[in-house]
Amino acid sequence: LKRTLTYWKDDNADLPEVEYEDLDVMKMEMPPGSRGYGVDQTIHHPDTEKRVAAIEEIKKENPGADRFELQRLLNPIDIPEKFRGKNERIGRGFK
Image 1 (cartoon, rainbow, N blue to C red):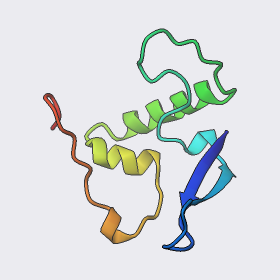
Image 2: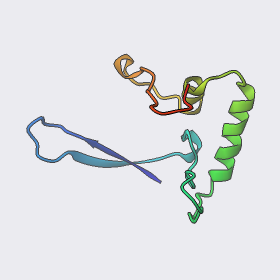
Image 3: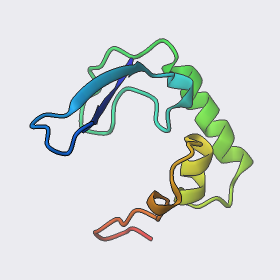
């Protein structure tokens, strides 16, 4: 799996720079595969079941964690402070 990175080196550029980096399935917040959009017809990555088990173990070890804490546990990335705010979910049923 690859992660696509796009960014502008120059503010005046018409198109962004595009790079690809390897993606470690064991560090993904959600394993690759079905995202709940109907019948799962994907070809699963060989480490999908292993990552699902790791995610369930993290959830079991942190039963009181809210979705923000779980996100940090599942995907511990270091991002600049100004981007660390809680994402807003709009709609019914979100706390």
